[in-house]
Length: 136
Image (cartoon, rainbow, N blue to C red; front, side, top):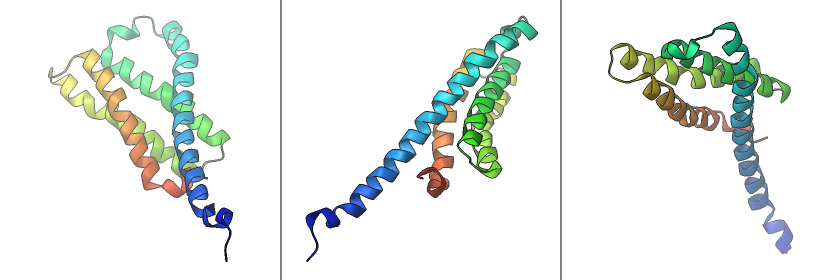
């Protein structure tokens, strides 16, 4: 006969893995914010008036977040392949929205807001695709 403790071990293990997955997502969002906060002032100094160019500002913002997230993933010993996949998930929404922005269909503010909103589910989808790599 198994004890009650043993019968709950698989559920507890799965719950821990799911919690680790969720915490990893939060870690990546925090590292993206750190990238923006640390690199943003450098861009303001190096490129005065960057905000007057929404397409460039969006790509710089994407780069800042990607650098922060990539650095954190490397610290956490993720492979370069995973870092590249996550970086693509973060940058592609910005690039995709450049087309409607260039056509005048959306504003610069919509470009920036839309790309940020699309980036979060794109990151989650990438993590779910490689869930084994993000649950440990």
